Length: 334
Image 1 (spheres, helix red, strand yellow):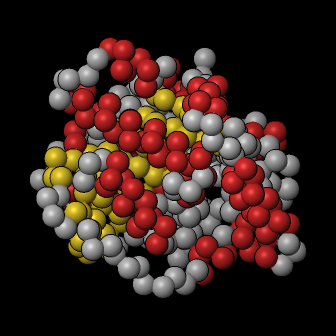
Image 2: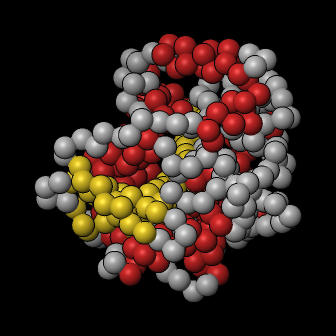
Image 3: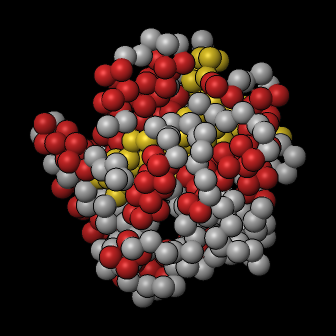
């Protein structure tokens, strides 16, 4: 049975007496944008995401960013200016359908991960993207980033890999590659609306077709136009990790919205991972859209999701330090 904590999430929202009116407004804005005949196709195909030109990011004074040259790309290491926590690092793999490069939102994500991880360093590679760099470029860069961290003295048992959308799928593909090549796996995985099935075979691709405000009501979107796979088989587990084996994988936190076309990518992943003996927490947020966590602390649902990330990181840390309780783990992986 797949893990379903939808009721738990809804209950927590009710207990906090927080409305999701803000989320409904955002959903409506997204739906109106995608319904526009001119703007919609560009948004759904990822053309706007890919061509987005952002202003230079203004790094808060509390942080320091170090640029790291990897073999084929550059990465950013965000740390606290004073008293950085070097006991653990989060390897963040950004989303963008494998066609969108690093953007400022993920620098904000890095700041949140730093805060939730009690000052932990956050390492974000700006991995190569399609169509200029199809598979296996992104995976190669993710592996390079992981190996750089190990070479810099980070123990795999103190690395947490986090990713959203394509970055979530890439995080899983990275772990498949590491296991297959005899490299020690990370401490845990944080997966936000992970894109795990590039064959689009899950039932939610049909069930949520008219509900998904971002990818719904069209077959002409980035989840069907797959520049990343090139001439490869989309069912290749390094491309669609859902079709891989999760034996020996670290604990996973999976968050997804109930109206996403990619919902099955998460529920099927949770099912397979749990059957393989992996500790999994799957949180399905009612009426939420793809990577709603981008609302950060401004939407009740995204705020709750980030709080859940913080709890997951604390549970992982306590297990590593052997200070956890059985009840604590049961609550996390119920």
